[in-house]
Structure formats: C-alpha cells, structure tokens
Image (cartoon, rainbow, N blue to C red; front, side):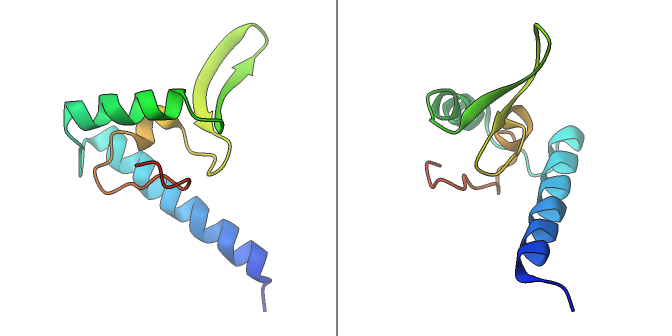
Length: 85
C-alpha cells in the first residue's frame, strides 16, 4: 500500500497533465480577459517563479502547485492552489 504523500503527488501530476493537455489543445479554454487577469495575478504572486536554464528563462511556474502559469491560466476550469482565482 502506498503512502498518502505519494498518492497526493500522483493525483497532482495527473491533474497537471490533464490541464496541460487541455491548454495545448484549446479545450475548456478561458476567455481572453480571464487569461490576462490570471497572468497578472500570478505575475504579482509570491509563488510565481521563473524556471531558468543558465541565462535563459524557460517558463514561469507556480512554486506552490508546480504548474506552468502560461498553460494553467488558459484552462477555464483550473483553480489557483493559493485561492487567488
């Protein structure tokens, strides 16, 4: 039997993969104004972090849920883990 922490991480990973796929396929897409608002909120958030390789920024990610902000902000049914949107 698995530990609770592992189960929680697995659920988060699956949820993230589903959200990422929805964003890339434009399924369950939020409105342009909602996307812009979410990105502004995330950009000002303490959990917003730049994932970088050397001097190049790869993605802005949420350090709380580890989701890429660009993709998560586009999914209408996605929720902020910090409760900000």
